[in-house]
Image 1 (cartoon, one colour):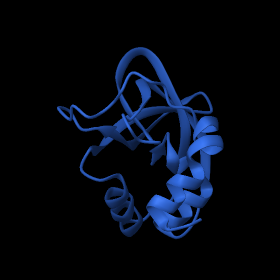
Image 2 (tube, one colour; image 1 turned 90 degrees about the horizontal axis):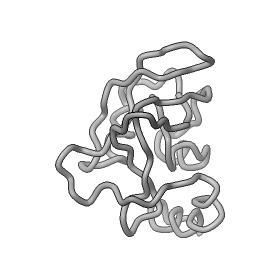
Image 3 (tube, helix red, strand yellow; image 1 turned 60 degrees about the vertical axis):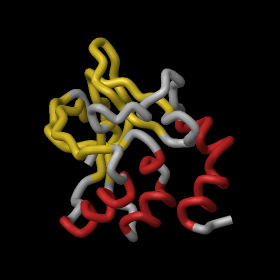
Image 4 (tube, helix red, strand yellow; image 1 turned 45 degrees about the horizontal axis):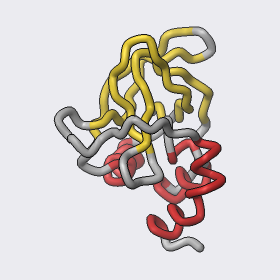
Length: 131
């Protein structure tokens, strides 16, 4: 599973699926990452000449995928994609903004460093009750 937003943070992945699976750095060509309006998390949409950096988690089981589906909610759809992992093409899945959902995305870019520095504590409290 390719992730490009909050699930790149090990503590968040652990809270969602109960563990942090092995992962490798990956790039998703043909997509662009934006911040969701009014939220601290991103969405991606198809965009020629762009790419999104992220992680590819390995060895997820069916139950963990169901937990990820619930975490991502109805605004995202699990979509087959082709990633670049260590310079090689790899087929996998990732969560893409559901077509026709006008709330996703904004035109504001999303960066992991900003999320961690500015939004992490509030996000953890809102989603997991962690202060």
